[in-house]
Image (cartoon, rainbow, N blue to C red; front, side, top):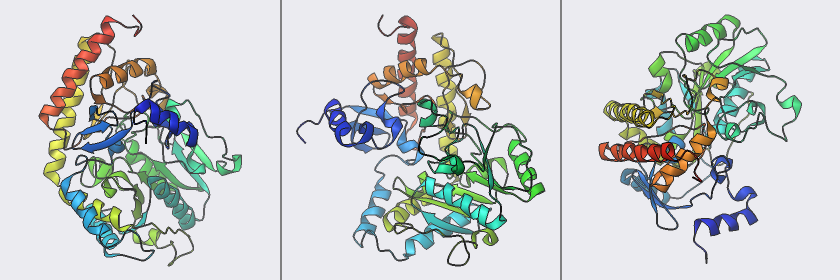
Length: 427
């Protein structure tokens, strides 16, 4: 390439890629400016094509929990690649990764590998419909479960940042059987509902924790009418704890969708549940799902290597760092006179420029998106990369040691003071 600058690459990208990016939030529409293009990464850092180093709190939206280019994962992927990259046939790696998931998550007896979190949630719902013989599903406003047609209603993540209540191109009949409920309120179900799908910790409208009794209530209400409960743990699975959010909160779903961590940074997804439910999948049952790249040997090698390094001590360390980061951010931003909420759940940290704790989608949307955009750029200018959208979360990882976390906090203090001194960035 002749023009390896962020602005040059973005201009070139816009000529050949819609919006210049391959996932909407990357275009910086909600925060303004030109996105940085990553050239390489290591540990807690990424370097853009212009040579600038950023302390990265995006971490591939949680997929990178050990740190970028972790040597154990690189070695595992390299070893796997020397034997071939894709076969369209089963491999030992997919069996080993499935066994590792089953061993860690008591609600799961069988697993099906797919290639993304969207595939995982989409197919889990198909399984629930096939198992129950029912059509209706219930989701929650502000929960994002990927971009399959039936779930693109009041989603969080980039949909929230872009102000999209739904998506063009989705026919009305695709969402006719999708009911949207308020997060943290147990809906009353009937015998027409096949399943309820929920983020057990909502991490796509900022960070919203389940209120006491919410997940337990969903479990009881699903049991009452014979519906299945699906946990979307694409973000929380193997990040909150060794057994995910269901371990933390003690509620066992019928099906669970995974992504992110189980690929060690490579494209992968999976879903699983008890055997009688999963056995409706072909070739055993009438519910069809297939994928040439499902169980890809590079992704399973990386995922297995990542899980093997994530023991209880690792989660304890990471939770401690996340708690320190959250409390310190709240303190330094508050001392600068900024109204801010910094919720934390185990290893995830949220950031709202608003009064009051967010408990659902409407309260999460009270965050000041313009203030977030200003803070985002003040941090980016000082070498700290946050997600370019007000409805994402911060993903501190094991590579963010105490020195790195303290650097983030000092930088946040300077950024907050700059905002307090000049509330108008043009001033």
